[in-house]
Image (cartoon, rainbow, N blue to C red):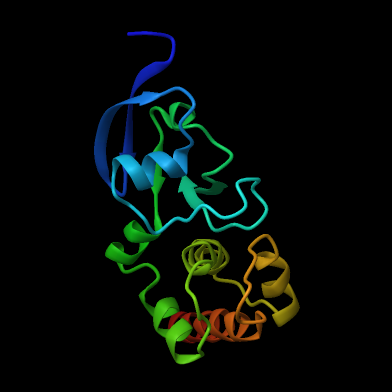
Length: 162
């Protein structure tokens, strides 16, 4: 094996994956190209837009700023994994109900980031929701509908838990 490639093993959406990767392959390119998990998108490639967001060991990270080899041994969750687990089913329904998506490019990153906020299960103002989502860029919706969807989901979840 050359210095240009490395075999990595990681858990992606609950399944162990072992692959030989080029040392320069970004995590999001690995997920999309090698594993066919195309939910995470490449947008700005500078970590600003949030379209490439995934969870790494439970924390939201930018897949365009990480190399796949840096994730060796880690657990990765993509929007496909959150969807399959049902974790964001109500959030996705509210995105549709509130017309919080248009082109859909930012939606996976928005869902992953919003899921992080919803995990806290604490009341949030609209301004706090906006601030939490501020690292994700949307060119279509103007954010109001996205904030509506997250606020609705948070309210519903808090009502169910009380």
